[in-house]
Length: 114
Length: 110
Image 1 (spheres, rainbow over the protein chains, first blue to last red):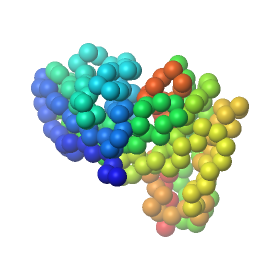
Image 2 (cartoon, rainbow over the protein chains, first blue to last red; image 1 turned 90 degrees about the horizontal axis):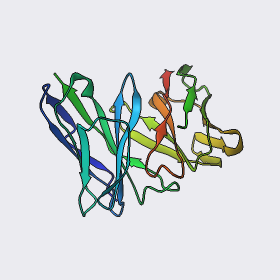
Image 3 (cartoon, each protein chain N blue to C red; image 1 turned 120 degrees about the horizontal axis):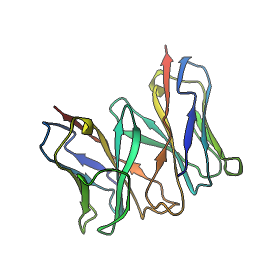
């Protein structure tokens, strides 16, 4: 099976712009989670989608949003970008996001905000 | 919420040496995974190990759930083992939400 794919891999934006990142899970996986990684805060959970519904959400402002499509592909959107949004954004997929599921990560999207 | 602590934060080894990385967690967990983050940022799955012991080549892991810790052993280290190792846990009522430790940065010198 193909692994988790993320596009684009690199992105440069300026403050105030918005950005959309895409994640395609492993075939058959219905849960997609998003994480932000920064040097100061480490890896932090953004949100999780299962069957097109947001099931869990981390402590991020409303500028961060996401959605999941019927084919389980997911997008996350960040509006009104700030310098502090510069980070590596990782998505992970699992069969159902349950406690017994292994999560598999994509290669990430590295976002730089100037 | 649950806290995950990894030690040591940094580790420098000579090629061929063995090492032990530790992960402590503050509450019961249903899922514990070890990852290796490569230089390009991707998290590579090493083990899914909520309890017990597993081995994969030169790597092995042990989780003692009742005492809330997990250990990752790397034997006969190679330069390609360099990178950051993370443990992450998930609790029953936090579907899909992995809580990560701060990582151990391993550098293996030739």
